[in-house]
Length: 590
Image (cartoon, rainbow, N blue to C red; front, side, top):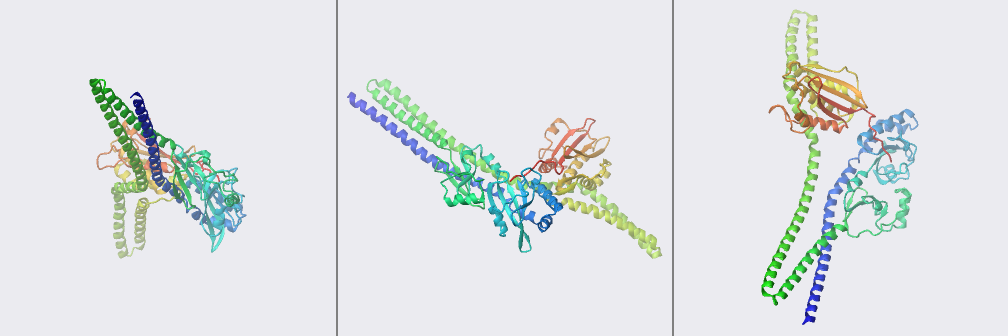
């Protein structure tokens, strides 16, 4: 009997061990499948972001090649003045578009102009005729290539377009883009994320030891091709050792790249361990229950009490385990849903930003309607009076007086045209980046509001019209100034002294515009929420609270700052800082 009891306990232990091992292996297999599915969903979100980053620069080299100074330099490659002009033009374009470098090559592949002409590792004088993107562009097609720069030893994505003179390719314009930002975004991920080329060579990854390694041994022909294009700076490409086989992959980009995600094995092991623990708890519960049944033969009351307690404990453990499992699954679903909502919201915010800016301009146009109507009524009344007088003078034969009245009519019409033209220019939608004279923008903004200042009896002091040039969007800059001037006009509405002053200066590489009023100033609560959307101190119907939020967004988009504060002598002031050309250190390297 004693031997049978020992065999029974041994059999129970073996069954329990098998149950635990089976639960672990099943959970590991199921967890691996779930991780691959999760990785595929994550790649569906990551791939469009990568493709969007590449596509937005696709037409840049083509547009740059259409410049007249580029064609002129290719026709006269040795003229120093033309080279300097193209170099500076490329530098400005590279800074504004935030690309690594822009450079121009002749038909032999020699670089004759580049945005990094003034750097120690400049492309000027270098020959890139061996690069595939140059050969593709020379054949009249768009060239694309990813590799390590032979000049700077820094990797990048190259896009090239031919410069056409009639039906002949006279040169090639190339743009270099850095993809390092994607590696920085992937750095915190627990999973291994890689981007590999058509030869399965990894060139981007959040695991540094994987970079410039291949997913499988490369053939001799592939090794020779990589060496001929110097794609990876003559590095010896060796296979990755010990890489996990299961992974999610997705094709992306015009060069046939593969974006791959290798799930972290630790996550699968943790899930499998939880299932094994659950199986161990179930097995332990069964063993304890069996032990309780065995004890019942010896002490009936003790066995009954122990059996009830063990059954309650087993039930509670099952309920808690089910609750915890449901909570974990729900938390995972909530995280995925929030991530998808966040990406969708970000897309909506970006797509509606320009519409919000335009809506802000139209709202200001409505507010300026009364003042502009008053400005137009005055020249209209003058035109009517001069016309009546001119007719009378003509009937009397007084040609000189009639001619003078017609001159007055022409001047009044020109003033009306200037007002209407300024309104039309401000109302249009514009995304054009060009050289803007800040003094002219201030004068144009004040011109649109001068009727309001006159009607309300507010004195406006403008700076002397000294030219001060920046690079930006003239219409949006005027929108910022009109917003600030209107706020200053509202601030002095109930003030004893009704004055608004504008100053313009240069400081630390910035154009600084300060618009100050003689109003009561701002409270601490207002100053804390000054640039929040829909926050306003104006009564209902006077504003939506979007003016300062839109203005701050416009200034930040041009790498500037908008700040508001109280003046020491009373009143409030808003300071706009916009970078002057050459004030940013935005150099490009290959």
